[in-house]
Length: 91
Image 1 (cartoon, helix red, strand yellow):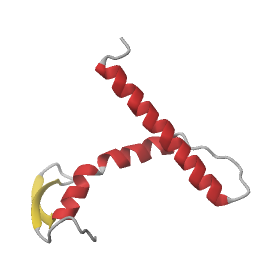
Image 2: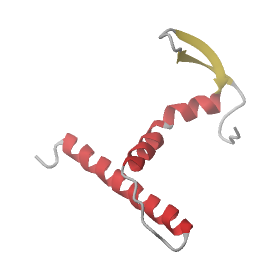
Image 3: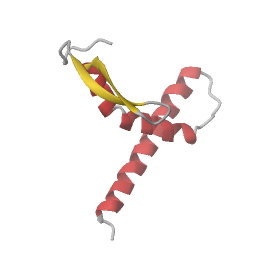
Image 4: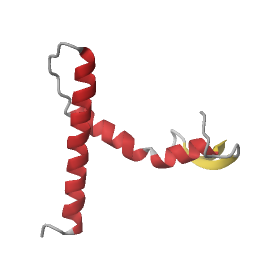
């Protein structure tokens, strides 16, 4: 993994093993940072793949680019809408 914004240091992280016990490991700071912030991206990918649009297109890249962008916009709009409801703006 390459990073120009993290130092070459190791951080201690806790990992849950299959049996439920927790162990402490050392990993590079860049990977620790990535694991902290990756949740939103993975969750958006998961939600977008649930409602996949299969449309016929002359070019495969049109389908992969346009419809992926469309589903990302729909999922992000839904997340923003739910966030506004939880704040209470529409009550």
